[in-house]
Image 1: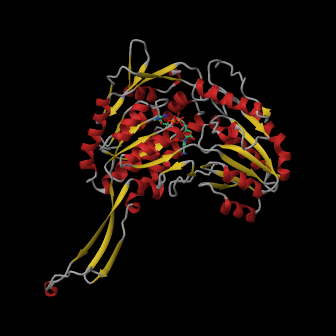
Image 2: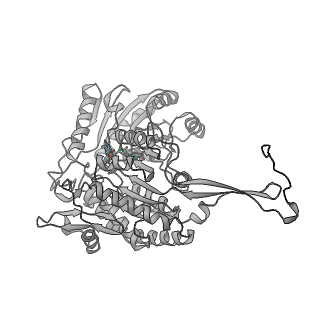
Image 3: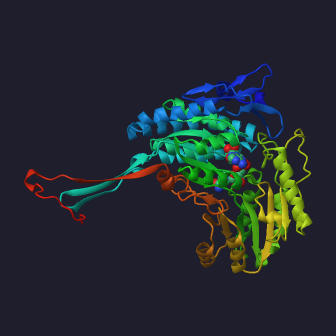
Length: 519
Ligand code: NAD
């Protein structure tokens, strides 16, 4: 696999890895501006999901290494938080350009470690890049508020100040976009950040922090540690870390939210999802079926905003055979192959879990309209592939409906009315995203008013907001009260200071103490 990658990427990989006699490179830590070999004796093998070859070994950083990362952030915070807003903005401009220049290499690295198709991997980078671009507007975004003449000779103003050392903990499914939801927002507002990328694909983070360094962000502005539960608990417990951004599963997110909050930290936690698409009989059939297939099976269903449940209202059920036919046409292949529509799942364990959830649906009485479990991908016998799968007549009490499957599996239901669809969705514990497909404005408006989900698409299958807005998943998909990126993200990484000042001429000297509450 390594022979297929470009010279630029090989150079970047060599900088962040050390080749041992075994020729298996190891991923380095990034501490105080240096790529360092970990002294740990605990390593996690990282496999290419299309072949299951080991590509790199990821260290589980020692306590001393993790402490060194926090110390570096703490030291740099003293100067970085005092840097001018224009200095920070200039670094962000350069960072933005460097990401653009390296988008193909980043995509190749993502495909190698994570498995998604190259074009999808570029999308992963692009959606993160948009957050970086938004951060470049910090000179307007971080303006405070002023009110003059609050009392005689008295004015009040607010400023937004950074929190200090912050931390980011990321999942495997968007190795570029999600770290870019975190550290650029932290850095532009004057914080520093310890990142703990997913141990299953940390390569994009390593590449991105190298680009950040080249863009002029100072040593210690961002540090990277690796590991799993111990690294996460270290972050939750470390008294110098003031805030944690987390994206990942419910189990980890709940744990991190509870443990971090108990230790007095600000925590934002984006978690799992079960996103429903409602198909009205008046929808544009061609667009709707194509959008549904793309949003259910793209990235092999490993997106928190995948449309993983379809609710066919009334006569829309007649389109189901056509939906199956379109899903069948998708090409499953290794992500770097030019004809791939969807790549492998992240690991053999993920494949096994997805297959057993499909079987649970069958056992509980759902109809298996399309079964991708036994798919063969020529040349990639050992890959973690599952083809597009559709389970129909699924009932809300079935396990395949209750759990987030996180694979290329669409569960589908028939309901009589829009009200029935809304009832089903509002009863589901998650509130990440949903979409309605209709040509009727009143139907769309009713849906957006009555549905209890944080991100809604009207004829838009994956309504992930651009960063002038924020990512506003709700209910079981989010813990915390300030969302990721956009205005909300800036608020998360800053706190308000409010200054009330009185400047009075010599002639207005106060002659006696005012003991009553000033009004
Ligand atoms: P994950 O929870 O397994 O891993 C995320 C991070 O948490 C990793 O860095 C990992 O090391 C750490 N971690 C994992 N288990 C832990 C535990 N028990 N205790 C402490 N730390 C732990 O998630 P994943 O499998 O990498 O990602 C997929 C999940 O992320 C899906 O549920 C998906 O819906 C969710 N996700 C949500 C969003 C969103 O914005 N809502 C976006 C992307 C992914």
